[in-house]
Length: 160
Ligand code: THU
Image 1 (cartoon, protein in one colour):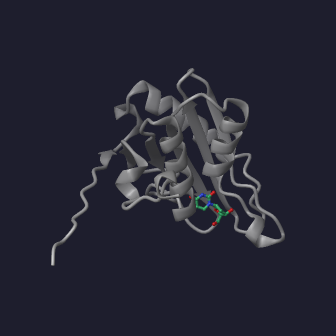
Image 2: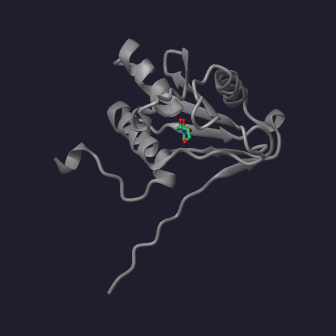
């Protein structure tokens, strides 16, 4: 028997003033995008912002539906909006923030499994790691150099 061990690393910052300028501005766009989320069913509003290699920032937020399975997460709304307008431009980073109706989110919100896979598809497509910048409403900020750090044993087109 042999064992495979995963190592991943997350930078933890206690306030936004500690962030690099690029990370701080992208997080600010994600925070602003929270306000425009359409989340009447969960009352859980998520904002995301994608930074492209050409310097453009594309916001997104969760879009819900009375037919619940149709709900789309903020991360995928932002990523797909970016890819639909700039299909050949590499994604460099994505920031995510959220606001809950039930609690003050004082810890970072981490992307769901489906969004991790979608972010990974963009990494694979752009052949470049995507940095993640995560914060709740308040509290610590997590920065992660690649989605692979939170998605071990990734599935990609090489298997097809
Ligand atoms: N949601 C996101 O937008 N991103 C995540 O990473 C987690 C969940 C949305 C989906 C749904 O509209 C609401 O949050 C509650 O799950």
